[in-house]
Image: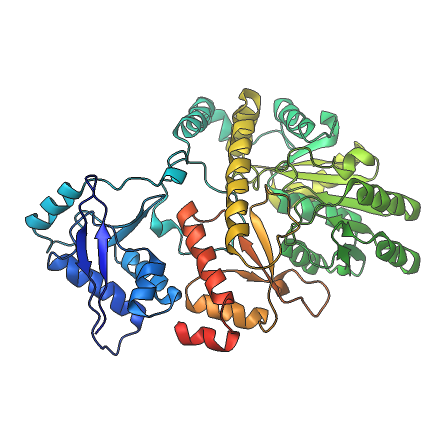
Amino acid sequence: MQTLQGQSPSSVGRPHPWHAVIHGSDKPRYVAIADVIADDMRNGRLPPGARLPAQRVLAEALEVDFTTVARGYQEAQRRGLIESRVGAGTFVRDGAQDGVGEGGREAAALCGPAPLPAAETAAPAFGRSAARCSADLSMNLPPDIEDPDLLARMRGGLVDVAQDLVDLLRYQEFGGAEQDRQAGVEWLALRGLPVRSERLLVCAGTHSALHAVLGALAKPGDRICAEDLTYPGLRGLAAQLGLEVVGLPMDEDGILPDAFAEVCRTRPPKALYCNPTLQNPTTITLSAERRQALVDIARRHGVAIVEDDAYGALPVGGPVPMAALAPDMVFYIGGVAKVLGAGLRLAYLVVPEARHVWQLSAFLRATTVMASPLTVALATRWIGDGTAQAILAAIRAESTLRQTVARSILPGPAPRSRPEAFHYWLPLPAGWSRSSFAATLRGAKLGIVVSDAFSVNSPAPEAVRLCLGGCDRDGTRGALDMIAHTLSRPPELASVFL
């Protein structure tokens, strides 16, 4: 039998004691923790509103592993017993159990609300419920917008767009009406990319644009070059189109020019695909000098460049797009899903010459017909009234905060990323393989992506990608704590504590 005396917060400083008693059981320890929370709620030992001990405190008191307690709290959340409040802690939910008596409710009322720690009082509140995130760091999406004023502004744009709902439910001009293309021109100007509207197509997301460009540039059996660790979507599209992808090695400044030049000399590819800013997955940003070197090599050998600038708007003062260096040979894709919201499936495709618009239009019509008029109209509205710029600033600020948290928690040297990225490339310490690490975290119900998903050449490095935007701030911090704790122990011991 093990016990723990915990405290619930009190506005007048009076602790409410809780003794967690876990008897011997055939059930997994994390289930036993959730069970004792439920039992003590029913018998009144844990009143509504009581704050549970921090996970590390409970782990030490019960002499179990941190991940066991984390899973126990997750199980209790899944049952609807407890909830996490950003900056305050984990609390028993009001009305979570019918068996909680009035005496328990009165005790909770006397305790009052939990005071926020000083470091958190200036932080924005998060409204996302625990059910929307189960410690999943696998999907690369920006943090949710939680600022009430900005959310109201965003909804206002949606209401304004709905005034034209009947028209927006009809087929629209292919590639975007003039006002939509002009909105794209305005948005890309913020990236330091001047374009003319006749060279811009509004597409149904980056995948749609990339599919069309690769299909127009290459035929089955042709080669394209990419980073040796590259966006999985490119690998999938290349496989569909029957294209061979040649991976190019990278250093801290991105693709090695000599490696690209060697491929061009021996068997020139049809295109060079690159994700030059906050590259997925490594977070590398191609330096200005490296961009120019790659452009020069591509021009010398007549190779088109496909620039996927999914994250380019996030950094402040980053290098200008490659399309600004060589507008006559770069196909530029400026998606907004990673900088405004994953559900906004929209991308601005800029082509080297106006004639390419007609070439790509046939391909786009056959695959996507048109971008969603409602989505396009909303993006145009947000760009025109400045809402899009405010969303970008909020995502940038929150991403910077989460990178700071990640660097303070995770072991090893800081990544090469700029602080605005919302994904994190984690090389594993000696002794860990990516497969065993992923399996260990999967046992703790925590999702990550191993390097195999990105690797063009084999073997893949012993590294994983962590996405910091998919959960609320507390969920992300808890997942990072779990990862750091896992890495602090030898791999052969990790499974013992799950």
